[in-house]
Image (spheres, rainbow, N blue to C red):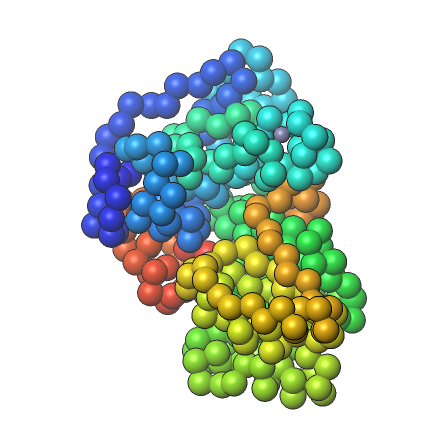
Length: 338
Ligand SMILES: [Zn+2]
C-alpha cells in the first residue's frame, strides 16, 4: 500500500486490519493479483482525487471466497473465483444496455476502491465469477481487465470483422497481448509492434501474422508493405501521443482507430482533412460491460484464448514488479502471488 503519491519506493508492505464486508459483499482470500498500468497511474497520483488513501492497488484478483454477507447467495467459502474489476449500479440506462463503464457510479476495484495487493479484499458479491477452465490462480488473475478491455475495443467499438487487418501497438503489454489473441478469434489478420526481437517472437507465437520493431522500423511503411498498399482497417492503440501520427498514416480508407489509454501522453495533433476525406473513425474505449467479460471468459474454457503470464513476484516485492512494468521489460501480465 502507499500513504502518499510518488515512485515505487512509496509502496509499503505492512499489516492492516481485515476488510469488513457488508450484507451484499464477500471477503476474498487473494491468491494472485495481476498488475495493470492503472496501478502506476494511481501510485503516481494521476487523477489523485479518485484514489482512496492510504491505498491498496490491484484490479485483477483471483482467489478463494472466505466469507459472504448475509444476503449473498450462490457463493460459498472455498469457491475458486476471479473478480470482475468494474463496479456499477446495474440499474441505470447505461448498465441496462451493456455500457457498464459509462455508469455514473462506475468504479474500478483497486483503483477507486481498495484492491488485491493484499491477503484479503472485500468486493461486491455480484463481481464474483468462477475461474474458467483449468486456469491457475496466477493465470486467472491475468485475464479480466485486459481481455475485457481488448474485447470491448475490438468488437463493440471498432467492429473488427473476419478478413480485416488490425495493427496492434505494443504487443508486449497486457492489453496488447490480449488484443492479438482476440483479433485472431475474430478471424482478423494481425500486425503487431514491439520494442525488441524477443517480444516480436512472442507476439508471433501468440498469432500475429506480421511483426514490426517500432524502435528500429518505420511502422506505417511496414504496414503498407504487408497489406500491399491497403493498410490497416483497425488500429489498436493504448500508447497515445507517441503513436498517434503513425497510426493516422497506417490506416486504410474507412479505418477505425480505437484507443484505451495514453501511456506516452494525451496530446496529439489531428489533421481533420485526413479524417473526412479518408472517412476515419476515432473511437475511445474504457473497460467494458459485464456481458462482454462473460463472453470473453468463455473462450478460456476451450483454450481458444490463453492468459499470458510474464512473471510472478511475491506480494512483498510489488515495488520490483511495478518497476519491471515501468521499464517495459515485460511481455504479458506481471502477477503478484499472495
Ligand atoms: Zn449504471
